[in-house]
Length: 167
Ligand code: COA
Image (cartoon, rainbow, N blue to C red; front, side, top):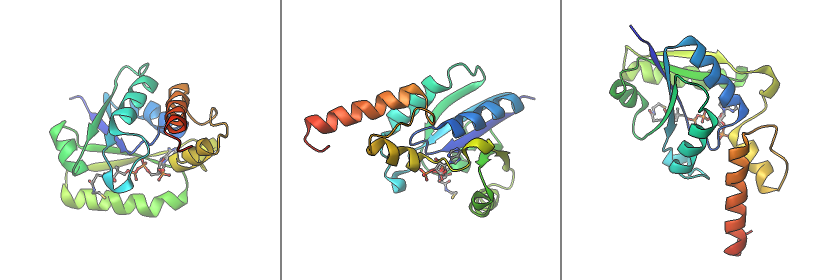
């Protein structure tokens, strides 16, 4: 039986930390779906379409990984795609409490769901999407933290803001 895992997140934008988790998940499961959440409550900087397009380009060399978007409850989405495994990355002990709480909620909503935690690479425990956005907003160098396609997206946004007089 093939096991499909869902790796959900806002990915606003996807960072090298997320890529590392997706790569490791791709070695553990037959198929991995990177599920980009609409996350309207987080008011993402990049549109859902931009986040999905960037993640698709970034992960294109991982053959058993696909990228999709979802809205609503994660457990409903997992059931829709026939998955009972949710993958989450753990960067530091500070992530643990929140992640265990979410895993508990998801298991409560669907008792068949298992959450698998993958320890994120030690090198980038400080990294988060909002840190990348903050550095990019101040025109700092984020090339160590994100794929070039993300840098292009930031540049496009910056040029658009300049044209509209909001930079
Ligand atoms: N490397 C770098 N950064 C990482 C990381 C890693 N390995 N793992 C997590 N992060 C960062 C993210 O960049 C993000 O940073 P930010 O808050 O600064 O933007 C933060 O950690 C956590 O975000 P993320 O991993 O994207 O998850 P999320 O908390 O935004 O997404 C969902 C959580 C989408 C999975 C969750 O809200 C969800 O399932 N929503 C659907 C609704 C639902 O089912 N709710 C019931 C369960 S609560």
